[in-house]
Image (cartoon, rainbow, N blue to C red; front, top):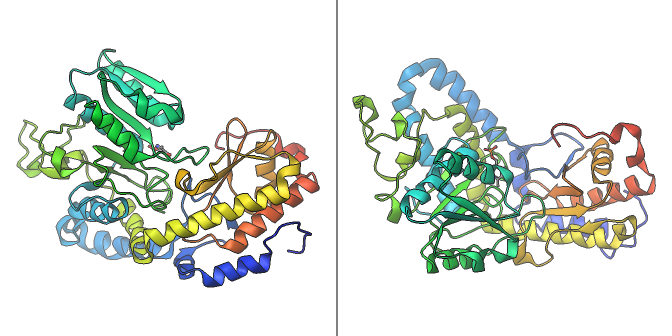
Length: 418
Ligand SMILES: *Cc1c(COP(=O)(O)O)cnc(C)c1O
């Protein structure tokens, strides 16, 4: 990189940050294509090398040799819970409170329904306008299914805490906004919910694997999270559900499949829920997906979620600083909060030609993505993104703008997946 820069941080300085990075060895645990600067780990995390090895072992030895005995011999039946216990360490939950099952959307359905059953006299579900659409859609579907007795109250992002009232059954929010990276104060909102007798449900899709949190310390009532973003579980990886022990006896979730039954192999015809977190399971666990996901989570625990967060904040603040210094004149804005305690691990730039700009960047092997209407989104997965990558990404963006590369006709039409 030789481009002229008016920046106060040089590429050499960024290389020095990389040498001083306490988790620099984490990157070697991933398989990353040569020459690619991958800033989309918030959408699909990179492949941990150990995931490929473990899946191969399951295919060759466990499934290939043990066949159906694998359910016990290789603990397939217990993997949802053993992996849940590991995720618990990243989100401040206790063992026995997290289980890896189904997908995020399906788990949202389960926990919202559970909360409604725990507050049968209340009719409002509170959320904010920054929530991810699927979470809202799932709530809408549930309300429709239950005969439209409930309503969704949707408020501005910074008005959630004061909008809880005596009719609120539950607040359901996503901690980190998928577009802007804005981070909710979970402790404050949970407390405000409890003060009015409501429950607090958290979607940790953009939190788990990049921001350490304390679900039990803040007394969260339920949480769900995504396996394929910062947890690097692979495309379509299973998701997780958290329910604290204090709710285990009271809770009922509606997807009462046989593997959430107290004794599935008795094959009785009356549903009786299992004790503990297992009652959130409905079906046979997706073993290949769970095994692929476990490898990256073991690495995450080894390198430390606190270290990951510290590096991620340094990466995102460096990126914003370089953008301000070098790109302001090209019409970019920054939609992500500057204060560390108010942002997750991504930076959202705004630009009226955002889609075309991202296509031109991708042609230069800088991979981020675009979100309507004008957000150019960059995720900084601290396990494998380097400070020098941040510098290079900004430098590529400067060149895309100065050379007008984004104006090419083939970059003008949007695709189905953005
Ligand atoms: C990514 C994401 C999801 C994904 O849901 P799937 O059911 O896995 O497709 C859900 N909620 C939020 C907040 C997300 O960011």
